[in-house]
Image 1 (cartoon, one colour):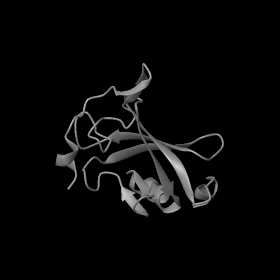
Image 2: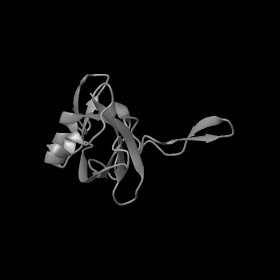
Image 3: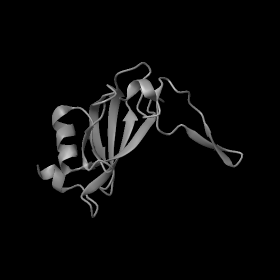
Image 4: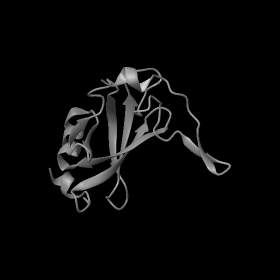
Length: 129
């Protein structure tokens, strides 16, 4: 796993990750990976993150069914940010956000306030148990 050694992990052994939709190029979400999560993502072709709140691996879609199929893994020029090109599964259009929206980046600053710019596609209460 020599390629894993080239990643610049932070003091907690994590690297920031951006998930971008392959077709639309929409930025879907931001998360973290540890070494094991990145290795499993490469092996499985499915996004696996590290949940800082739960302190464990988080297989995207394990509860919601909104799995991310990974087509490509990229790293930035400083080797300290990972970019995943993904297809968001489980709903059409794909839901990446725990709020039931397509993207986690749905809030836009307008007139000095954050405003939702994307609709809720599915009620989060019906997604998570």
